[in-house]
Length: 413
Image 1 (cartoon, rainbow, N blue to C red):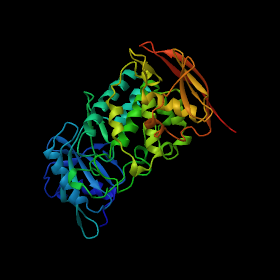
Image 2 (image 1 turned 180 degrees about the vertical axis):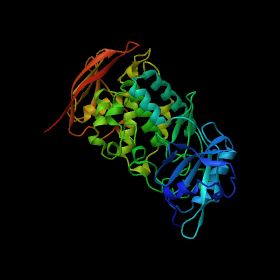
Image 3 (image 1 turned 90 degrees about the vertical axis):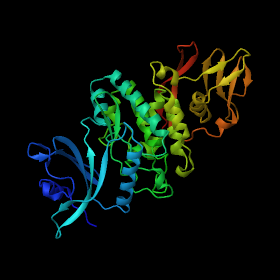
Image 4 (image 1 turned 30 degrees about the vertical axis):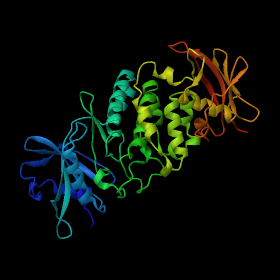
């Protein structure tokens, strides 16, 4: 079936007689001479006025196999599982008459209209005005949303900056449910693959379950926590289709200037390690449960300080405990030869041995600081052709020392 184009839809919606069931008293909202609308790869959305209220009319521009059947099931699922993160909508088959090729009836989605900026628009507003408090609040609201959706048996399928709206009270709302996974779709293939800047480069139609949003949630979350500290990164890395990560950063992460910046400023080791580890694995082999653990950590004022640390913990028996998340990146940097060692305070040193292993020393006594399960999952190939040139140690709020890497240089050798 050849669907109408945007121009043909614009002409059709001017006449209320073209609608089968919505009824009279419907007209498109205009700004100047043109209608208010937005368009994407597979559809366009018009702002309509219907019986004194604003509604959204979604019209499809491309035919997709099984769309009708799945849309009906998604509508039913949302009705049976209400949430403030959803909007109300209906899928109306054969609703709109288009006067082309002898006339044809096409389906539409008829939805609640939310008068709110997108997540991307709100991020831009806060970054342009250096509003870190606003960014932190937005990050916390997204964290709450992420924890909720990660625990659901469904997935949105295309979470990104313009598929999430930010209401006046700061609460978030998802829109565009065409690519959703619901339990009734178990065993089926995906009909679409989402926006490239938010998806694993190896994602394909065969990956379709309730873990579908995990990767995009990680991308959005890392972007937000980075912008809380460096709002100026938005203007540097945003291209209109992303927040700060673009497809090239995900496809060729070894050469990503953005990921190198994360390491340069020793930012968010846990999140960055997880992202690179996922990118370094075969897509169909990885398990994304770690994303939930990352998101569970609340965003607090001393977060940057804590997450840029490599700690050595001691209990009353002087038993040495190395926190897996903090040690992993430092272990990798030493093992790969970017540094010979790190003084992590209190006479503890992580350094490379003659066999390129990494050993913890305390007053010249050797401790086996790197458990086998960490050795097996160390991130590889992150900083290809890059070397660290300096670091210092400082104390955190709890008196523990940690490292900050000051410089990063290209190795032209």
